Length: 205
Image (cartoon, rainbow, N blue to C red; front, side):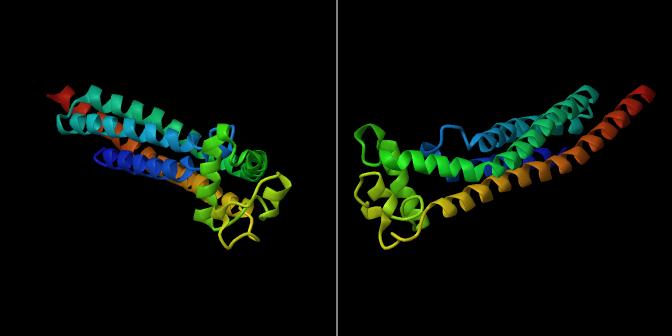
C-alpha cells in the first residue's frame, strides 16, 4: 500500500510526458490520439489520492479503510488495463491515422482559418527534420509553396517519421499501464491479506 502513491506519481508522470509529446500533433487528427495519455493522467491522480487513503488505513490498522482501498485500486487496475489495451489497439491504426491526417491537412497549410494546422506542420517538419507527407512535392501538388520549415530536408517525408514517433509513445503508454497494473494486482492481494489480519486481530481484542 505504501507503493500506491509512487505508482500514482509514475502514472501521472508518464501520462503528462506522453500528453506533451502528442499534443503538438493533435491538429492533424480528427480522433483524440492522446486519449490513453489523458486516461493515465486521470488514473494516476486518483491512484495518488487513493494511495494516501490506503496508507492511513494501514497505519491506523483500520479494516474498512484497507478493504475500501483494495476495491478502489481494483477498479483503477481495470481502467489501467483498458488504457493499455486501447493504446495497443490504437497503435495498429497509427499508419492509417497518420496518412489520413497528413494528407488531409497539407492542403490547409497557410490558410488563415487553419492557423493551428500551419503551426503544427512547421513544428513537425522542424522537429522531425522532414517535409510534406512523402516529400516537398506534396506542397506543390496542393498548390502551396514549400515552407521554410522544410529546411534542407525537402526529399524526406514526414509520414514514416511521425508514424514511428506516435507508435513509440502509444506503445510506451500501453506498456507502463499494463506493467503497473500487474504490480498493483500484487498490492491488492497484500492489502486484502492485511485487512484480514486486522479483522482477525480486532476480533480477538
